[in-house]
Length: 488
Picture 1 (cartoon, rainbow, N blue to C red):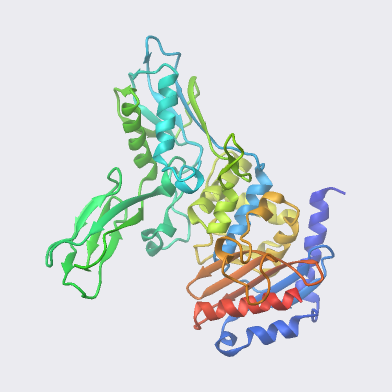
Picture 2 (cartoon, one colour; picture 1 turned 180 degrees about the horizontal axis):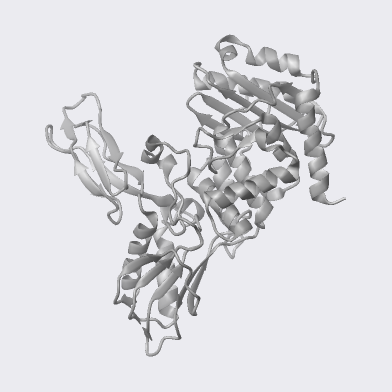
């Protein structure tokens, strides 16, 4: 029997149990936990199984469709580990039509974007993403290129849309660092910084770009008196080209930096690369342009690789420089990485990255598990879209399937140790016994992963609360208590 067939049978049994078993052993106790106080008003979905045997441990609404929030990133991680190897490195390739003569490259300098989302400090040992552009420019110069007679062209054909806005995202999402869109070529998670300082009372605050200008600044704000109430706000224009400042910034406020999503991240990174080329001694006579059509590779002058997808990046000394890409996504709950990897899974499966190809890759995966299409509505890769839906039992089927995948398992936050679970589940005595992904939106709180029971068995679980009016912290407390019940 093939692994695909075996896992389909196991996952089908899990889903059947979700709808046919009258009562799992801990249902009553879990129901009592989620019915406490104002938590009882929420919509709850809880499902858990013993990973080894497939036996149901708890089923309280396990077949209900729920908004998963960032536990949706588990789906992206599953797709990535399904279609890409753990040692996969993304390659950005630069090429010219022919071997340069006397330092002159006739024609265009083409940089083929591959969707690499790792040119950011967290995955570069603290270095800014622009350092990778300098590295690319340096390698091009060392290849013998001093002058390019044509344009600097960014080949964006790896993605159907060079910088797609994830479906289901709302306008407010695009205003914050959590709403940076993915792109086929970009740096620093497609965020740009501005530095803001108060001026004299009555005067506009002082605003400057932290790096190369990414926005037109429209400063309509004012510096308020010392001790006044802050009403200061930043608002990005629809196309991302302008940043409007409004409200009041108290005169005694500390200067600070804000990161804002870039509206056209490919063009922004391309302009940075053009500047880096000039600084490294490569003159480009033409202009910067983007090409949605694939350009045949000529003479390669540079190849820049990412860190491994599911393995840490290490120095020659053996010291870890950066965490695996999957770990950074899940432990930090990074939306930009999740959206990028979701598109890359689609590109690997069907040749070109898009939300359509990623969705098809996801449907293929769920089908291999025997999970009905009615159990999952997948919209984006991060869970920021509120139109995402999944049943806890479907999520558990995924968890059971990936329980033997090292890259997937190592990417999960560990209770009491790291990521979004660093300070959770202490009181339940579950430090280092829970490996799970958190999920939070307004009115949504979720936790899905694995817990090692008191008897040493591994239980896969998904606990989701939707539509609550209680505080998020109190709902998280209920979820943690429920995990404690599953661990007994």
